[in-house]
Amino acid sequence: MSNLNLHHLRLFRATAREGTLTAAARALNISQSAVSTQIKALEADLGHDLFERRGRNLVLTEAGRIALDHADEIFRTADQLAATFRIAGGQRRVLRIGALATLSRNFQMRFLSPLAGRDDVEVVLRSGTQGSLLRALEAMSIDVLLTNMMPARDAASPYLVRRLDEQPVSLVGARGRLALAAQGMAALLAEAPLILPTPETALRAGFDAMLDRLGIVPRIAAEADDMAMLRLLARADAGVAVIPPIVVQDELAGGMLYELFRLEDITEPFYAVTIRRTFPNPLLKEVFDTAAPQAAPEDSAG
Image (cartoon, rainbow, N blue to C red; front, side, top):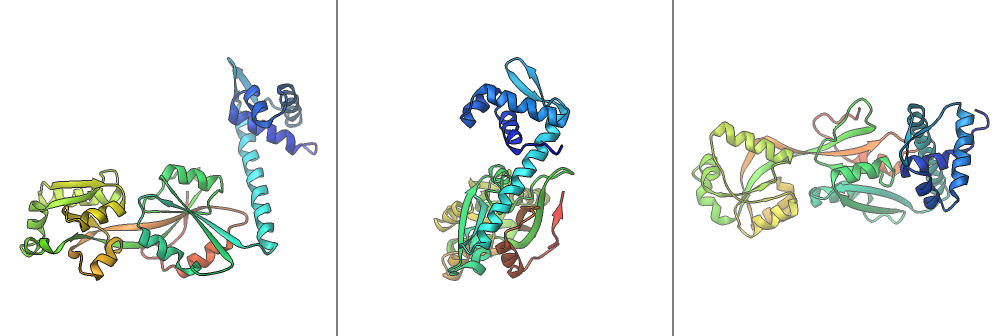
């Protein structure tokens, strides 16, 4: 084991990812024979075969899967170490944030407020799907994921989940909806066209369950998975929106929209998802210390 060569380990990891010696050699810009020779040297050092051939492809053995897990951890640690010393060298600090594309922009701005206007900090904000951002988090290309969806976890999951906040959800509409709202929430839900989050969202699931309890069949005017689009549809008076008031706080303050009813049993939680790192970004602690978590603020790991 004292002869373990990190260069060999890097070639092994590339081959595991590419699936063939030819593809790995092309990706690394070296000869196929060099890749083959150095993987054989690594297998000799470890005392186990790392691949078995199936047709034209190389498939990891059990020992190979274990070796790949360790290789990934070794190179992640190396990347963290390099990033730590770049920060220690006095360079401007960077916090890389991934945010679910449909997440409230107002909430994102509130999360970032402790860093706003600081000359020593650069914030890089990336939006995307939950799956793509979780992969980016594991690859350490982002430091934290902001989401309103709890990631699926099991005993092998690397995620640490912090519940940052919980926002109420309301029925929001234009002035013309006030007269119907005066007849009560049941009348509003039964007769007004509704602007709803899409069915796969947790918010929609809670709302549908409430309608079922009330025995109401809704008139759906529009569905959207983007809070910004729900806001625009409400502003255009396309119907009554099921939406957290934080999303339309400016419109509520300006009298463009009205909070008709608060849905007491429905809330939208906001989570910050990280992974355990040897050298966590110190800016995250500053942001988390400023945030005021509600309702089970503890970190949890799978």
